[in-house]
Length: 128
Image 1 (cartoon, helix red, strand yellow):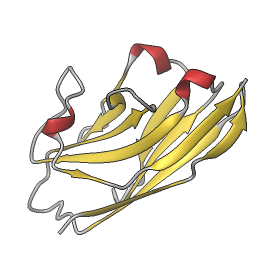
Image 2: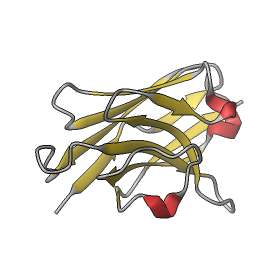
Image 3: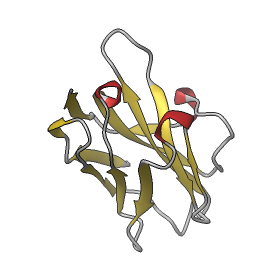
Image 4: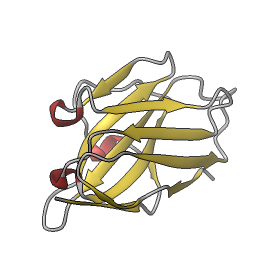
């Protein structure tokens, strides 16, 4: 089975940076060459929302509120997913989850139900 574990969260001041990592194991890239990896986030009392995605061709997509501040990437062996977050704002606070949509491309919209695998999350807190 696919196993995903996030790390790198923490408490920072507004304007600072954080890099989140997601370790991915159990995914057979030879069997499922097409995939979509994404970072979702969820603030207390709000629905989970997509922040960024990257597909098997390296094409990236960002939600408008993080464009030009966040960068998604993965290691060459596709076993680690990253989210570089710069110029963090208090509204970026929340639990961040990595997710995998196996055997399919990224859609134009971030839909939580499209992703069959996800981690337990890592907390990001940004103070003003």
